[in-house]
Structures are given as structure tokens and as C-alpha cells.
Length: 362
Ligand SMILES: Cc1cc2nc3c(=O)[nH]c(=O)nc-3n(C[C@H](O)[C@H](O)[C@H](O)COP(=O)(O)OP(=O)(O)OC[C@H]3O[C@@H](n4cnc5c(N)ncnc54)[C@H](O)[C@@H]3O)c2cc1C
Image 1 (tube, rainbow, N blue to C red):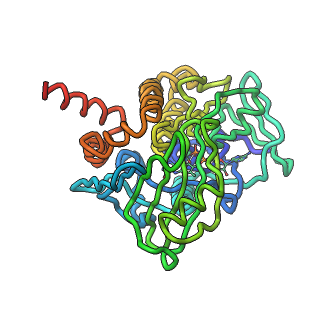
Image 2: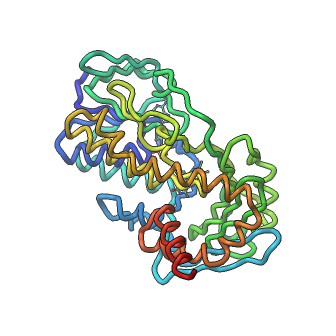
């Protein structure tokens, strides 16, 4: 058994962000994760604010830079919102994860593959985990970056409310009737939207539901949506929950810090989670490099928690008032969002900008 300074469970966006910062600071970091072949479903849209958070350029894995968003609601025509500079880039999630892992490895982080965890024990001075293969890892701190179905949370008996849910698939470009711009279609599923994300050689297609249980994004519904919008059948269909519970859960349990979807850092209105994953991974790493990470990490993430609380209220209002709210999104509100995103603003910052512009008009 090697002793490490920090263990990270999960090599997604949160885990790799934390690993990069900790390894760059000279700590001995072990990242224990499932093999990349068991990659999780994700549409790979990375907004400008997330792009700006990486410690390195992600341009080698960018497939398209997006300056135009089509927004529709079944009862109204499609509106095209655009920005002068990209507000989002399209990546293929497996490629993005592999690239971020390479960056963290180059800093000195060591990655180990496992089929899963069988045990976790907190001691006075360290955390110990055991994998299904019988390997044991120990370190003073553990970062749980193992996603919305976090095994670390389960082993610690942590509970959280139901989050959002999404299902996705892909259609090769040659099978698509018309290659679409980035598209959000409201009204195709209750309490959510359908999306089309163009990726060069294929289109990623999916359904999002802001509160799991409000509706179920099922395979049959995805295939109907896909046929209607692209004239083809989606392949490699898979669904996964999104961690949207940060406002209601704690971020530290003893020597374990939760980050990314394991901490519920995804915003619930549109289900953007990569930004919250990178942000929380970096903040947890910074806290570990200082004193009392269990105290200072939750404090460092308090601003994001507050923002997600506000977005959660906005989400309830937005999906409760469809189709009125989607018409707002198709108009000035959507323009503010797209341009705010292009400037690297968060949803909350865009909302404040929009409110400011509205109050100037009265
Ligand atoms: C269908 C879908 C589409 C989405 N599209 C977007 C999008 O376009 N843009 C966006 O910003 N967000 C999107 N999201 C949300 C985004 O994918 C997540 O918020 C983000 O991936 C969270 O990153 P993470 O690193 O916290 O967790 P994850 O990406 O879930 O990574 C968890 C890591 O832990 C590993 N792991 C899991 N369990 C174990 C275990 N027991 N032992 C060891 N390792 C384990 C996994 O293999 C993985 O490496 C989407 C989500 C879904 C479901």
C-alpha cells in the first residue's frame, strides 16, 4: 500500500481539475476511477466561463465553436439567437476527459483503474479505501469526484434529494436530414427540453428533465424526437442523473470532500454541469493546499451554492410557466443569456444583467 497526499475517486471533469491543481503544487495524487470505456453520458457542451477555468487550453478537443443558438417551443416558431464571439464550444466528452487526464498526468497525478470501491474507512489522520480488485489506498484527504451516483457518498451513508435526469444518443452526420445549429426545443418533454448539439461528424441529441420524477426522459421519447428533428434514429442511447442538489447537501464528511456531480454542483435550469465540476474540483484542491480543507472548501464554494439556490427557484418558475417563459427566452432574455455566456458570465450574472437592463427601461 502506497501512501498518498490526496486520493481522488473519479476521473471526470471534477476529478481531473482537482488532480491537476494538486499535482502541479507537488502533492502525491492518486486518481482511482472506472475505465474510460465506461464513460458517462454527456453532451459535451462547454460554455465560455468553463473554458476560461481550465488551467490549459482545451482547443485540441474542440469540435465546433458556437455563436448561434436556435430556441423553439412547440407553439411558436424557431428563433435564432446569436453572439459576436462563441458562447460555447462543442466537445466529445470522452475526448475531453482523456485530454484533461493527460494534462493531470503531465503534472504528476497517477491514475488507477478499478471496477469499483468495496470499502471506505475514516481514521483520525487518514482515509482508506479498498477497490474490488483488493487494492488499498490511503491518504489524509479524499476527494469524491465520482459523479451523481457517487459510491463514496453511498459508502458514507450520505443521502441527497433527486436531481435532474437526461438521456442522449448520437446520429452520424450522413444520416441527418439537415445538419442543425445548436438547438434547444422546449415543450417536447414535460419539465425539460430536447437538444441538438452539432459535433462535426455527428449530432448529439438528447432530452433533459429538470427534476427527475416530473417526467421520465425515455428511449422511445428520445427516438420520436430524433426522428422528428433529424429524420433518423439515435445510436448509443444512454441516460444518467445529474447532480443538482448542492443547495441541500453538505460538502465535507470528515476527511472527504465532495466535488462536481457528487456534490450536486450542476445548475438545474439547463443542466450545465461541467463548469460546476471544474470550479468545485479546483476549489477543493486549493482548500487542501491550505489549512482545514473541511472548513474552507465549503466556504469557498458558498457563492456557487447561493447561485444554484437562485437558479433552482428560477427553474421552478421557468418550467412551471412554460410556454410563456420559453417565449421570453426566445426574445430579449435569450439574447442577454447568449451574449452574457459569450462574455463568460454565469446564469445568475446574466440574470442580474437582464434585471438591470429592465429596470433602466422603467
Ligand atoms: C446526458 C447528459 C448530457 C449532459 N450534457 C452536458 C453538457 O453538454 N454540458 C455540461 O456542462 N454538462 C452536461 N451534463 C452534466 C455533466 O455531464 C456533469 O455535470 C459532469 O459530467 C459532472 O462531472 P463530474 O466529474 O462531477 O462527474 P462525472 O463526469 O460523472 O465523472 C465521474 C467519474 O467517476 C468515475 N466513477 C463513477 N463511479 C465510480 C466508482 N464507483 N469508482 C471509481 N470511479 C467511479 C466515472 O468513471 C467518472 O470518471 C450532462 C449530463 C448528462 C447526463
